[in-house]
Image (tube, rainbow, N blue to C red; front, side):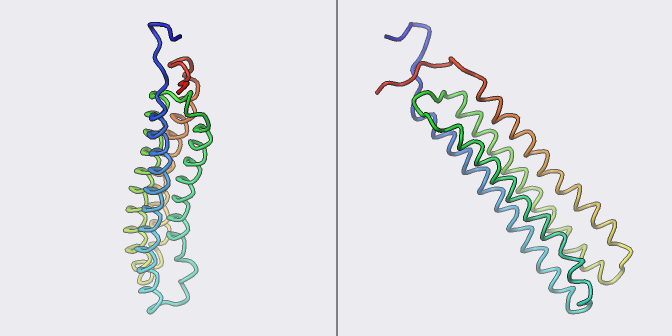
Length: 172
């Protein structure tokens, strides 16, 4: 018997949690893929003029790849909390969706920035090597966008688990 002031946990709430898992990994990997592809085009184009700078110019590709790891970390953390759908509240599902979207979209934005800066930066570095430090600083600030999203996403995902007693476990 359920008390009149409590509601049953809706098993469909876990859908939102799984959408958070999907959002984190898919959008983060889209950002990583775009950043890698766009920077890679610039590296190959620059390599025709200055093949000696290829290894030095690989930094944007590495930074873009890290964005995919942000999505992976968040997806695994959210997925670990989806083990009991009968006790999973709508609040927790929405929080996990928000966490996944935060990390995924932040990483997507960072990947777009890294790709554009990486492409233009390595081409410019081939013509004027004094631009290297400036390019690295811009890439660091672009990567920080994804890192900010990761931090907030992890805070939201972990704090959602502390909200207990919001609903009575579903028995059907």
